[in-house]
Length: 72
Image (cartoon, rainbow, N blue to C red; front, top):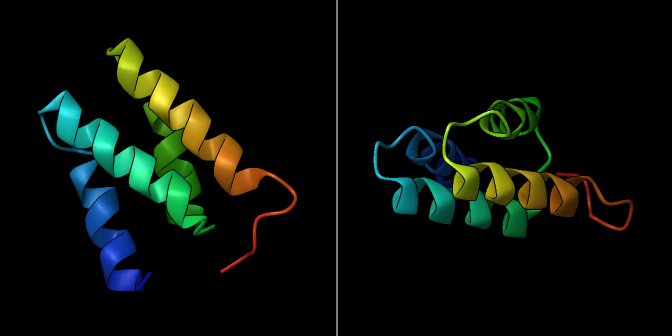
């Protein structure tokens, strides 16, 4: 996945629609793209007011930070 796509997904995590936010979070987790900006944003989202967003962010961080995930 390109850095432009990752950047766009990070932007989408700021959407007011929680379904859009959750989908972007899921895609970031699946990408395995480990950058400071991505980790920071997902960490912030673990404190979101919406529980579905929080859970998605926690799962995404787990996928990105697991030891067998390639570093980009």
